[in-house]
Amino acid sequence: MKTLKSMRLHIGVFGRTNVGKSAFVNRITGQDVSIVSEVAGTTTDVVEKSMELLPVGPVTFLDTAGIDDNSELGNLRIEKTKKVLNRTDVGVIICDYNGFGSYETEIVKQLEELQIPYLIVVNKNDLQMIAEDKLSALEAFTKNVLLTSVLTDNDIVFKFKGMLIKLLPEDFVNTPKIAGDLVPPKSTVILVIPIDKEAPKGRIILPQVQTLRDLLDSDCLSYVVKESELKEALDNLKKPPSLVVTDSQAFKQVSEIVPDEIPLTSFSILFARLKGDLEAFIEGAQAIDRLRDGDKVLILESCTHHAIEDDIGRVKIPNWLRKKTGKNLIIDNYAGHDFPDIREYSLIIHCGACMTNRREVLSRILTANKYGIPITNYGVTISYCLDILPRAVKIFK
Image 1 (tube, one colour):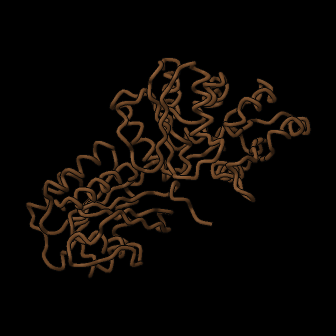
Image 2 (image 1 turned 180 degrees about the vertical axis):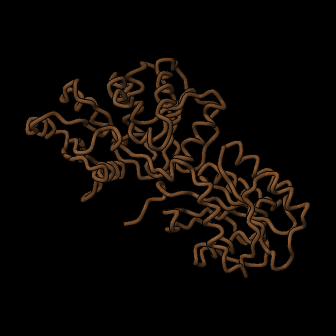
Image 3 (image 1 turned 90 degrees about the vertical axis):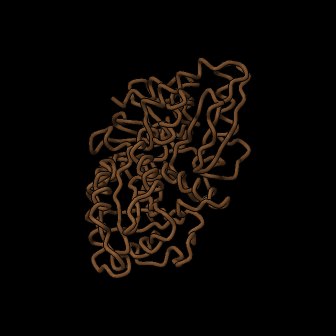
């Protein structure tokens, strides 16, 4: 019933301790999301609040810890705060009449390096207005500067929304399609959804639900079947479907059933385009053939989950990789939003990213590129190992 965090605009709120970050989030959301106190360093971890911010749409505020706490615990908070940048679509830097110092300047530098749009909120003007020279220094960074008081400005929500709308990323304003843009309206699309150990009883997994909804929104005729009923489904149709989308784990079986002239791809490849960079993932998959004995491969999962007996990231993909390469590979798994030290790896394989936003995936791709490490994703890896990648990506012109 709710928009998923992964499909929301993530707004990161940054600043020194006690400049009013938490009070700002509480005022904009209209709720006591974060603890507010005159004691510096009250916010000790990232506080998340998801809401519908009309007319912007679904957003998640990320209220971070202060960035000038020099204690040992404070350093841990600072590290967590900086990691939030990888999930941020729009940055909000809070300061007061003292203007910017080295802490805020460093955040600006990192936002600009990641090409994240941002605005500056100068708080506490009910106590003291910022001096002209300090305001000019802020405007040298960006013209998106809001002078306000979280406590007394009755128009703060309206002003913030107006400024935020100007900074919205293009892919949020014009929400990209998952599959609906690949076929004309009224087209028939078959979704192949195996009911396996990873599908909870009574439900189907998230990417499949989102793809189905996207096709319905695009006025497509959706035909949902298990792989065991796929051949019968094809025979029942008066004319061939415009597209078949399968769970990656059934790729081999489905590719043998679906005639070559019918476009075929997977949910994970659709999400490689939606949540990341499909071309980068395709290029990264080419590195599989260059792997040698003893090379380390990192398999990244966005969410933590209970690993099942035949887990795709811990069992199936490692088996496919070793069979494809014939090499003795060292394969590590890592789950969660944090990004580990990747410099020792020869290849990174990202999950479908259904539980994270595109900004975080793109940040991980940028980091991998920085160290010259190939990166790909589940669906691209599986189709490459099964020698059907060219067919699986052919529909993406």
